[in-house]
Picture 1 (cartoon, one colour):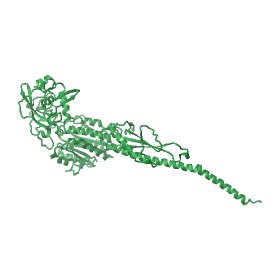
Picture 2 (picture 1 turned 45 degrees about the vertical axis):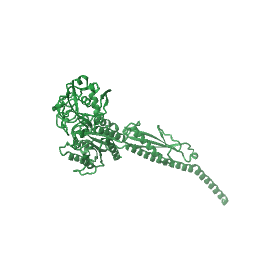
Picture 3 (picture 1 turned 90 degrees about the vertical axis):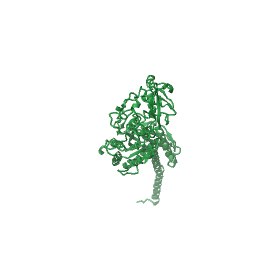
Picture 4 (picture 1 turned 135 degrees about the vertical axis):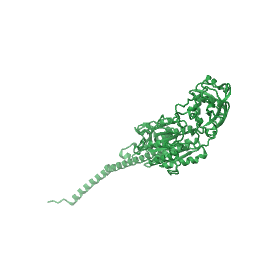
Length: 593
């Protein structure tokens, strides 16, 4: 039996070893190495994707914060600013150690970035349908950012992966949900700083009236009023001239009727007319031309008689003016239809502070509509509290109707321009929150429109207004109407130019208002308070009632008692209202961020 030689056996082992080595080298070079490189590139891709996602997320947050902190009423400006902020934030980052300073913005999808470059695409979405809307559309409550980075494989040549591979990520930045009810004061004192002239219209001779100027300036100080809650007198209808606030007395007999009649009395110290200086000066020293209905109406400077007769309706035709003994030829004007409406239009534009407050409230609605996913409610209040969109004020003194000139229309018989009793009564609207999701149900258009025609009339029923607002926001389980959206922050903004004078609950008006603030606190509803007080001696008193620094339910401020982050802002001039409302808007957005 032969035995294999040791030499032959060793040779075979060497051959097998060489073959195995070759196989190992082959596997390492053509299998393991590519797999390792593939795994490396996949890991690198995933890292790039994570880094891109982090960058896009931070951009979405920055964009949302920019929108939320804006006070611009132009939606497109706000949205473009948010895009600019997002791009700037993105450029401050890097992906795979590659700086993103050269990032560009694309207007179309899909994105096609260059090698080691990034590009961004922005669109705004309607929050319910998630459909894109054009920039500038306030329904775009979600900002969606899509970003792409052009990844070039590190071992592209070895793996045969030449080219640019886009890494794509998307992030959404949603605006916060806020349900806010504005309680808006329309009490008679809301036009106390309108520039007016107090006139005694008297019989000068058989063919002409005379017009004695008794006083001129802003209504409250010109009438020498001292009441801490303002005056019931109004610059425009309903004027309540017989309230006899201040130092002058109204005489219904001296006034006579509005339209088509000459002055019935001789010169006296009694008040027959109060007119607005529609040029905005304290003495009607500039005069003005008013365009109304496409027609121009001239009101000569220093001519108070022209204002008086226009407000009475005595300039609607030559025949009416002649019958009323109006010396229009001497004034250089020709009576024609529309003079009354032209006067009223111009007078409304000069009402202070109610005109300033209306403009500030409408700006507030616009800012909030742009800055967050806001739904709006509105409660207007004088002595009565608005209950529906078309509700009107009840008579402040319990009469069956409201007079255009006097509190009691039965004591003074007018005719035409305006009718007495006043019809319709002053608007006293309320707009209820809509709990349906989506910007289409924000009530933005309704609350904006409802504030435009508001007229100063009545007392200051803060307790009733707060009760109505709380009722909208409280859930059905809390005994409310449940009009707030699930997940939305709920808040009330109270605007007043005075102090509580009337209560829906029959108790002390101030204590009843504090009681409502306590109910709001228990329901988790902050009451942000805006107080306008243009009489320095009254500012401390108003602060005590509205302050956020004292939460004592018996003696504290409405903001402080309501708690939950509520704040108090006081304006001492009507010109400050817009800024104050903007500050409240900013605080509310911070509350829900």
